[in-house]
Image (tube, rainbow, N blue to C red; front, side):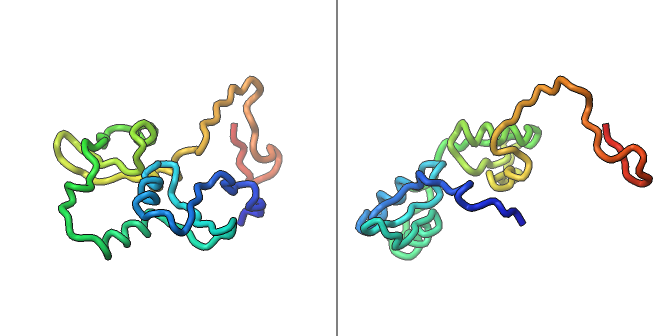
Length: 149
């Protein structure tokens, strides 16, 4: 378990709103790809939180039925199964989306999400220009401990 204090990773610029804010305004704010939750404050005190799933539940439970075409995003950014994970991440960033349908020709093959890519990508690209001897791991004279170069 990592013992880093939570202050190290907290987002202090998280978006907030008041309890009286219309749901439509909250939904509009959640459309920003960088916003996954809105903290609800009343007199600077946390009284709630609104997430994308809260909006989905609200729509599912309260509104008149409408065909999906009234709310779907179109055109859709897609990716080919032969493209790389890095390409997928770049396409998501460029298009401001968290999911990409995987399409081969005109045939749907599946869906890739940002959360599925996360374990394979560094949050920040780190470029290192190493100008020294190769790193050696292990101890040369200890039996059974491999040495990597």
